[in-house]
Image (cartoon, rainbow, N blue to C red; front, side):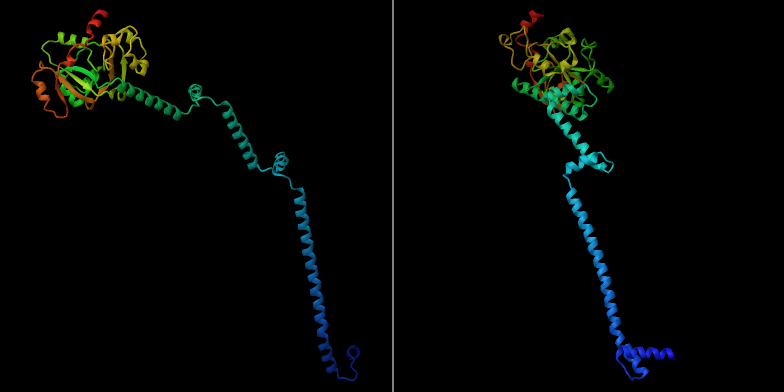
Length: 356
């Protein structure tokens, strides 16, 4: 009880109360105490805010200091690369990228410095395994295309209208059906035929002999004399076969040593074809040899495999042919002509009689 009285006395002194009841003193003290508590709360809140601001300011200073240090210590990119290349922290991807760039640059410089003409590059790389197979195919194709262009040029400039092939009339039906075949193919297809050379002197059993513009009349005349009572035809062939089919160009008789001693690749060349119209010992102009005739009347173009019937331009025959020719003429796919012009010798035959 004494304690309560002391508290009330103390409160009266604080709030200026004199004779008030205890309830009034308590109510007044409680009411006046609220502003003090609010003030305390405000102070605490203000104090906490200041701490937060201090923390924020301190953080800003740290960030600003860090940025300033980064800005002050920043280097150009190439200096960074040099600085970090010697450390483990340098990015491996960047190292690879830089190394690759240097290699590429070095390769390009070497190519620029060591560049050679195309033909020198070909000679250098053809002997190595690294030569690109596609380039080899491309070069091979270019050579074939060039050969075709050159042959077409010769055909055009020399006005070559056809090649000729002579055969027995008995063989004509199979030729019209299957094309001109060599002996091996005739045997393979089990076709009936009559051959001229039982033993070929040129050692090419599956070959087909043709001549440019006029038959090899020496050989043709020999067979007609040996095989009497037989009918013959001369077939004109499209000159496209010179570049569309596999063949060799023989400036003389294919069985002669002048030809058999030569390399097969040479005989397939443009040079070999051109040589058929040239000769060191023959004056073509003096002999009045037509432009589209070979110099040597025995010059031959030998074909391998088959000459398809689509290349047949015309079939020439004479009155000596038997009635079989008229049966075959019923086939409207082919042109037949009664003419003995291709059965005669060339006009320069006397010169060649002396030379042989």
